[in-house]
Length: 334
Ligand code: NDP
Image: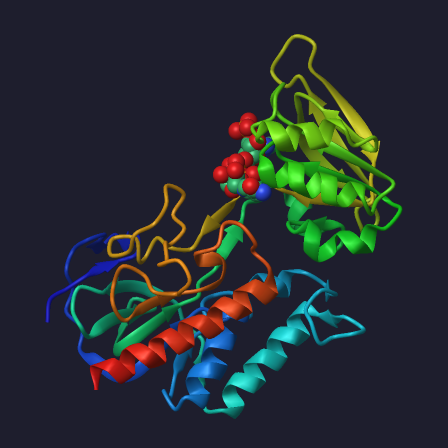
């Protein structure tokens, strides 16, 4: 058969060039992604006897596995560990018969009624319905020290981790609405919040800017960029460039306990973009009040389609919607 586009391509097999692969399996319901959205979709799809097969993606368990404690997911009065919670969700999905496999969708063809998905560039699976739950990836600055302290003072989610910095001093990097929102959220918990902004103005909406400027314990560090984080085992401080590239460039240090990234997210939609309606950033657009995409039989849930709430619990809720929508769709096809 001829078809589709592998993601990125390889030197031998450029992007967009067709490739011959035998169909290995056909399933009623294929789920891509293993965060709270994917697992919840799997629980519902399995209980509806859709015999779902899930491919987890490279980061099994999704973004929650990069945080330590999860305190805001309903049902855990003492909080839980992000990785442990995703293990629980996996077990729950498997208990009802979901087959969970490690692998990554590297190409799709959603042009026909039967959906085609390439896994790891070498396995072709077809399905009557596909639930996309591939999430979004928080952008990081790309510093070595940032990598070193991930989960030990470095976080990309204030609502997830802010509470652990009660009465402490933290820094937020970014100048958009997310940074402004996270800084004001953290200001309600922490003693002091530095907002590290690379230019001399914020990109955030005027209303959000006003909130930042009216919050006494937020100090905006204009024209500052992060050089390095330091500390013994955990973050204890940040070194910044001030006026980088200008005659008066200097480096400054601040004692901090937490460092929050808020420089945007990238939805993991590259593989599907050719077929699906997305916004300008790449978030998959769903029909309001549903998980339906513009392609019948393809559903999207979780952070892949949510630029606003981005919470584990909202992702789980939308995963449930995707499975119910898929079940209805399949029922209508019979
Ligand atoms: P944005 O892309 O809007 O902003 C990213 C910010 O990070 C910019 O200020 C940018 O700086 C800065 N930045 C990017 N890269 C770096 C870097 N390497 N070093 C330092 N700073 C960097 O992302 P957001 O996540 O803030 O928002 C995404 C979308 O979601 C927007 O449309 C926003 O309006 C929306 N949103 C709405 C909310 C609401 O309405 N309540 C809440 C949150 C988000 P620079 O400005 O110099 O480019």
